[in-house]
Image 1 (cartoon, rainbow, N blue to C red):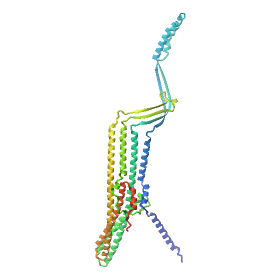
Image 2 (cartoon, one colour; image 1 turned 45 degrees about the horizontal axis):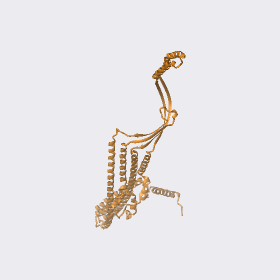
Image 3 (cartoon, rainbow, N blue to C red; image 1 turned 30 degrees about the horizontal axis):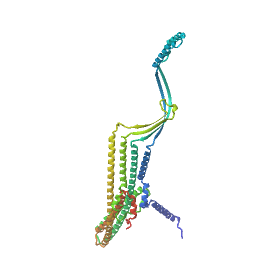
Image 4 (cartoon, helix red, strand yellow; image 1 turned 135 degrees about the vertical axis):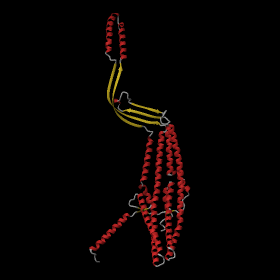
Length: 498
């Protein structure tokens, strides 16, 4: 075998490298086919909204847990540095006069307490002392003042514990529990809605793909008709006007095909964003319909109390009931135990105790806040919450019935369209043969193609309506996890009849 010159093999090698790189790039950009079950497993991790609901539930649970310790004592420690000055003033006028009078009386009676021979001497001494008393007591000031200044470090430990709050603490705890239930109901409702959104987006991408396939087939059919019409015109079988009719219909089919391609690209982008897959995702699970009817609507109405909307409304009623209990507690007394310990008794103020403990009973006789109106308002809120809960149950029941009817309508429409599709295909086949033989005008052929395209579109829409209505029904009855069960046992799948 002769070897090619280098100048001949270089372009071939470059072309092969370019082709390989292009194929690799196309492979990297090809959307990954993903089944509905795989998409369902990914939706929880890819949804920031569901993650936010999880955090909200956790936060409400932590708050409810925090209220469980409201009956425990509150112990605080404090430290103060106090600089003070104290001035004491003592009036000595009265005590000084009393002392002078007492001394005078004592000296006047003193000589009589001695023998007769000494009474004269003692009397003389007493007189001299009595004469000196005014001078002695005059040296004593009428007022005595004392002033001190010091800096004191005062550490203290204080404790207070509620003994009876009139029902305020149980009401707060019940309200916190109600908030947990509200958050959980929102979480469950958000999860159900995320499933419905996934069904809408996932099978919406399948609808767009089916419409693209249908419009492509229609365009291919019109291309064949146009080719046949040109040949018939060249053979003098049909006039040019009929060729123009087919040309106009063919161009309309091309516009429909282009629009379907763009809508498919939009639907694929929406699905990839929903699942947080920037590389692109392709839906591989086809649209489906169960030919057998659903269980009776009463089956789906049995679990209304477990639906997120009913649970949230009932939890809101519990919160309002807790508000009534809190309003009632304002009419009742409150009792607290308290204690305080001075940790630096050596440096304490003279008026400060070393420690103190006791019980306080408090009852509000007159309040500047109208407690009666507050209680009446709380009761009105409870009645409003009860009415809202009853209305929520009625609304959920209505949504379930409407969704069940939509599912049944879509199912019947899909099954009826099977016979219409077969008739439309047979009509198109007959019109093609007649047109090629020059027996049928081009308008009849265009109408046959349009009828087939419309029937296919209606069938695709009926299948999508069935899947979406089924997801809505299961979400309304809080059975959205059963969607995969209906999908698994579906006996009609769009695409199996290609």
